[in-house]
Length: 441
Image: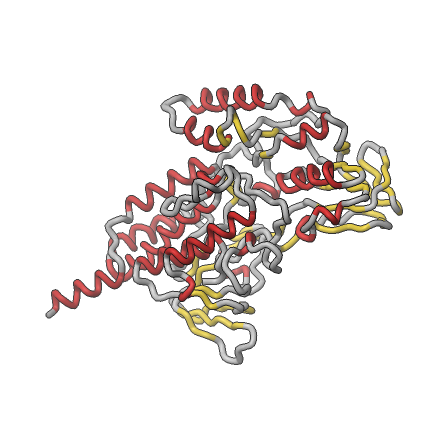
């Protein structure tokens, strides 16, 4: 296992439950990955909170404490992950300060893993990659030169970086909108550059986290079109249309893009605390020139332009690539190999961790089934091979890099749950082998 963040932890827990001999290699000195604030592996900043609620973010088998915020802070998220690792005795199966430089497949069920500082490679029967996808910054090329400071959002950590500065945030995803709000509060002036208009979803609807409301609504026995109409009306009633605040009018339907979970940006735009500009055309000294030919002076530009999907330690050809991106069944299972998995390579429209937990349940059952239930193993092998590129992803998402990992939380969850139920007859390896020894004696 490569990585002991939220995805790696739940995979490790499930593998151990199914008697699979395994351990995780983690380059930091603690679990948590992106939520281990202040470490090189982390991209969060001091005031970061989850954009999914605690109920929709928590692992199904380990609810978050009632005392946690409805939308936990990065500190609470890290506390929770450490508690999860302690609860299921995962620390003894994690090698910390262990960075993986390279892995290569030697043969079926035989992988060579090169660890930093070790002269000889390690040999493993299989590899599970859980290195996250919010760590390798994606920065656009902008014509001209800027005399001020330009940083990626990954380098933004503290509000003090904004003080007494004229700040421009480029990018209107959830991170960009959150940082623009931070700038509205702490900077001398704040602005955001938006390539297009977006729909905004409030974090709360009548005091309830909006994703909890959405989850309940999706369970109603109503036509899909009617459910979406109800959601649109609820959001419209709670927040209103973006253009009413001075934000650009969206050029797409509300469910066509990953939702912007933020009611504060419309508030600060409406109060004149955040200026709104279109796409950036070029830099000219201390000025930024925008697509509508407006120009403005800034001291600090923050690129909230997302992240690359990176696997620097493995040849991408091993991951069945298409157009430079791994193409795996359900974003996790190689269509033709049974000894290589990627956990957490998804971008859902609600919490990710319970979905990765379901991925982990399938990974553990499939590995165990190869030794204890060949019939189930053959069934799943055929499924992932024949449906290797199959994915329960709504077709109406806009075709953009931002949505390359996008999955509909509710549909994806139900798909995984059905697979787990189909594989629930698989026995843990230790129990099956113990039963076999008793029968032979």
